[in-house]
Image (cartoon, rainbow, N blue to C red; front, side):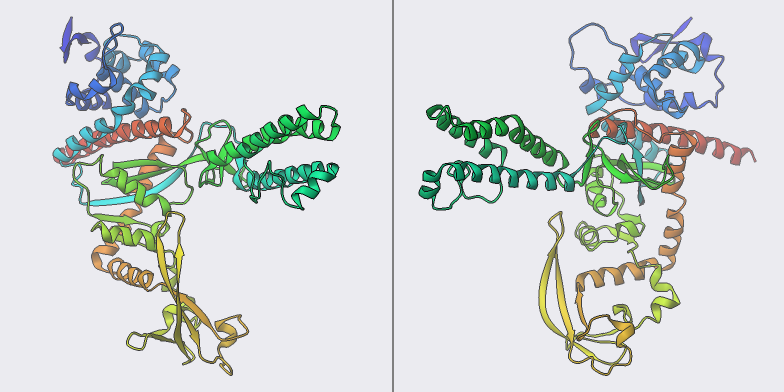
Length: 519
């Protein structure tokens, strides 16, 4: 006997339902996915082809598998054949591992984020999250890539420069062999290369063509014939390879040959216990009440430059953006503070010296700018020794992302005879400082907010918000390495993990609420 399951061609078997407890997490998965409108999955199935499995059924199976620490598509297919909760969700159908893997990594490419948003909306309706606060942090997860097939950008640039020198030497040799051309060029670079300092593969290809034309006129010119052979067989392919590697790196410092999107990062989970780098991704997660509200995947190892892209991506996922962002010192840069202020976020973000400033050693350090006095009207600083540092000039500093910071330079008029000079500076001359007044203002605002009663409470809460979620994902559910390769597919895996985590958290919250009522 069967009960109809949302669409005419799919049914849930009632005989299996009796074997599943009412408080089982599989019922939460089934109920939440059933509440999603069927039209949301239309993007995954444009039409045509043979009859497909119902997308809701596949979604339920994968979400329940992720909640049970089953991530391999083969293991999920095996569980569908052997375990009652999987059989119940699959309505006794048995999709193979290829179907499951294709569905989670390809079919749901355009649907997973809308699905996450829809389920988050249901959590908001149920009062599980209010979207008042956004606790953000990052963790690194190892990529599905060989740990030792790495490409370092610095090494590529170094080899490329050496190759360029070899090419120039080769062409100089050709010129030396042909005295007449040397005299005609008057010591300048060859016409084939031009007068540019750096060489590209396109320039080499054009030079080879011209040299081959010259060789056709002088077929017995052995030095020229050797040069053409070296260029075609060695130098040109190497130059093309170096350029391709540089392009793959982009503004990163490295990548893995087996997963070019992965960057080598230093991770806490080190299988060799020697602090070596491993290919991975930086997973940024924002939570509230330990529910995942937003997620994103990044190729940069540092959290500082991930905050703005993460929050910009969040706009399309969250129905109503939280306006209070709470983060640790890894995000406290001037650029991030400026962006949060521009976007009108209430920022409770620590900076890198926040905790150190509260120590006695910092507060008694006479060389620290924070322990000096700034006179705004005269635009000058007075150090701990009473010496005046006057404004000298203004300079600018630009980050890799294009953010421009204004630095004001101040210099002491005379540090001669100051008893604190040795502990203040190592410079032989007068003390000079470079100060970003905007950065000081942002830090002062952050300090005031963090030391308020609400700021202390939210900072303490942050430590048990995102860290608890990471503990659930990586330790309790054992997800420490991606199964799929590439930034896009790894992002989908994070989406599946986030959905499964939220459903598990909802199940736990419901159980706690029932226990509180009964108690």
